[in-house]
Length: 191
Image (cartoon, rainbow, N blue to C red; front, side, top):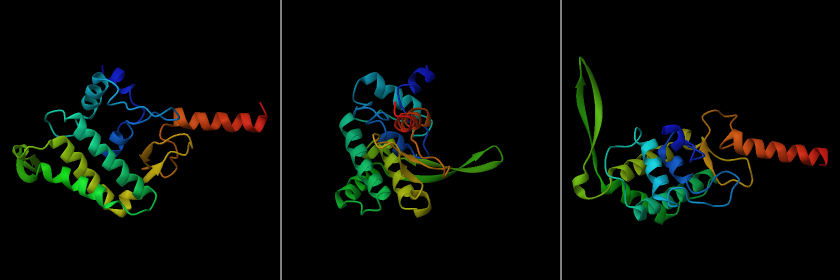
């Protein structure tokens, strides 16, 4: 099931969940399509695939998810473009982060100690959305991390990725990388 679910999404497993979320809006080199809103199966599949990376909890309301994704896209694109993040975007991200406060606790695991985060859902927000917004805010506010964000080098693609490898220039090398290389080959060979 995971392989079938994974095939529905072009980009998954980026360093922060926010990048995976914003990249659900279009497939590389394809017309704009919303992978989460196209049908309920896709949304459920995306949450299953991301479940190990986000807190347990209810699947968020689709309107709230759409609002967070719009704010994340605006913030991340602003950072990639070295432009100021719009005030309303900052306000939206703060809204999501504050909707479910978190506290850090110390826990024992055998003879070792670890920290764990408790999400206080009793305030009415969605812990998954609050986590994604918080993780994005921490990432975007660290210049060394935010500097890893890149746009796909395919001019027809809107995807953004985290370039952990500085040589990475495609969102999905097997898709966008191949398309650009094939187009370049045809231009050079005059075919």
